[in-house]
Length: 201
Length: 363
Image (tube, rainbow over all chains, first blue to last red):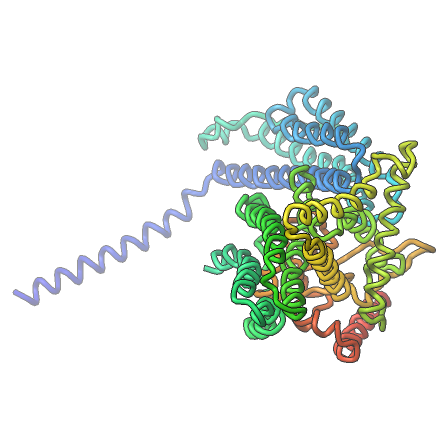
């Protein structure tokens, strides 16, 4: 009796193992469809877009931090312009709140408003720092001014880079709408907005 | 665990006033208790415990820098120091200090509170933009007759550090005693010049009531006289002024000792006539000795402080590439007072730094 039970158990286990192997072999051949491939590429595009966006926003945050640091230095070394500097601080705090998002940038005015506020503040802060008598010798002020200037110059490059990714992404969406719908990606099939730094042909 | 130690550690500075109080009430040679602690016990334990080169992780810096806890410690110190100076004036008026040795012990020990730690806290607060913190810095500096430090340090020293123009940067082979004269007197004169220049730009005379240097000179004297008026008894008017002004001298001497140690011999490259390379972590001596950094609110991480003056003490970084001091400040101060020993230890290190910077420049 024992032998029969043991024999049965072995054959059941063997059968299960064999069926597992079959399933996985068959699956790899048949389940990777065109929709899967499109989904893969879609996710890769999402990643590059997010990365490109984050690099741009981090750089902008770094610029704002340098502006805060510059204001801090000016507040420490000057006693006469405190009111003016405090106003600049308030404006700088507002700047982060004014900043566009991937959604809000659909309205060109949002970007324009942010750029105007940012450029004005950068220009005024740099002018104020450079007007300080000790500026030619104060390498801390010089370094902060340089950091802000360089970050300001990088803005267009980052936007261009972002636009390039978004253009490809939008084209990809256009071509593969049907497959993406199949893959239940309907919720995010909206085209992304561009800064229009690169002309769309 | 490490972060708890680091948080509690910054209360270590409060040991010094406790020792001064204890020493005074025990009397006699006990008035030297705080000095014994600061220049014998602390250096030994500082060396035994060693360095802590760890930095606050980048993703934590903002949170730690904003944490009120660290600000609270230095605010508390401000109130304590103000209370201590009033107590000190009272204490000397009680005639408990029996002879000249008791007086010396008490005054020099007291300077550890007001100069060793008090000026360090004032320095930290003087770099901040908030009006309250700047007021605290000025109050602390008032108790050591060194209020001009707030002008000279921020607008003078931080601009000209590691150049021949900076009186607070010791030159190679300059001994501390010669440095003291240069830093104290030139620093004071330079602060006047900076203030006169500011007023001139506003179309005001140097003899205007808006001249901060005028106030920074008068206010400590008035404060000292006020203490004398309140606490002097039985016609003995000399005790309180003697205590107040001499502890001030020892206090700012401690500051100058620290200045001497922090920048000894280091010079930035002159990239054009009168223009120097940007300040970087190579331009100040660094010391990451854990224990002495607790007592001095990480002032010893001075290389980072000069690059990022706005950073709060709790997030100052250790830079491996900076020139490193062999000991914490409490030991370095003793060495600075013995020039042959100082040159023997520091000139070799300075030469290594010079060779390294020359090599890097040629690459």
